[in-house]
Length: 67
Image 1 (cartoon, rainbow, N blue to C red):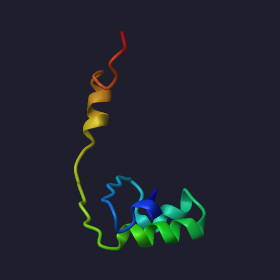
Image 2 (image 1 turned 30 degrees about the vertical axis):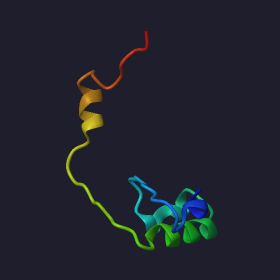
Image 3 (image 1 turned 180 degrees about the horizontal axis):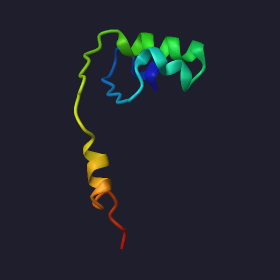
Image 4 (image 1 turned 180 degrees about the vertical axis):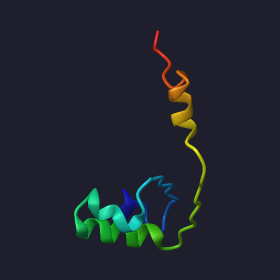
C-alpha cells in the first residue's frame, strides 16, 4: 500500500510507536523501507494529553452495543 501510494497519494498513519520502533512490529528491512517512504515529504503532528478513548471506556461509555 505504501509503495503504491508513494508520491502519488496522501497517506495518514497513526501510531503509538515511534517510527524508529517499527522494526518491533515488522521485519527490519520492511520497516526501514516503509519508514523511509513515509517520512519523505512527511508532515508530523504530535499530540499530547490524556486518551479520550480511555476516559470514555473507564466511564462506561466506550462501547455501544449493536442492536
